[in-house]
Image (cartoon, rainbow, N blue to C red; front, top):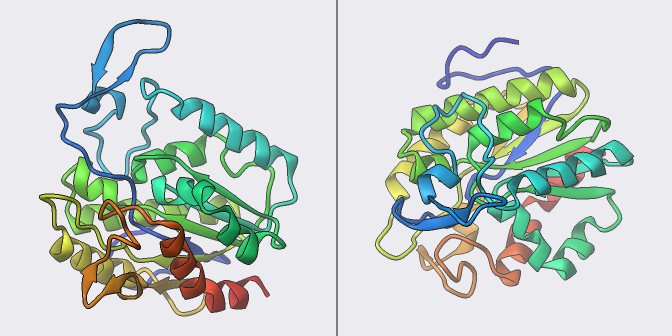
Length: 263
């Protein structure tokens, strides 16, 4: 399957990916972020996160502590089979682990797994797809949440984010031709000193055009997380990540679409 442009509808076979695009907290590149495994030497934030790759180029994070271990854990879970619903993405997906009651209420009976890794961008999702993340399973639906770290860490343009997402969809289509896909827009992000509303809006406008209304769909739930049009600390305490209340809003916002696509 060949994706040529991000400003026209796509058909990706029998897939629907839920792309939920807001990710981990964006931090200054000067932060000393991680230790090289087995060494006392520290590496920079940029080195630990393997920054600088185009949004469509697969890239891992061998120097980020725990990154590969988490990836391998997800691969091992996939190898066990019995998965109907996958949440795939960055820290907003990983942090479902902090809202177990909400997860159990909405997904406990759906053979669901989350496969998020903190601070990932489209590059890391591509690498993970190439290295076993979805091997051994045939889920009915994938919920993919990615993109904000491309805008923040990589200073990517909306067009570049869209191309990265399109590449992910293409990978999934080839791996899982019977799986459906729904793309969810980038969530609001208003961390201290950072406001990406304009770029997020432009990105979501492009992501919406990846939908064809049949096999690929798009859903923007950002407004449902806002209060009086602004990021609310009870829902997004750090301006990006969700609280348990935020995850309840997220789950309810996508519930009807998830039900429709899985049945």
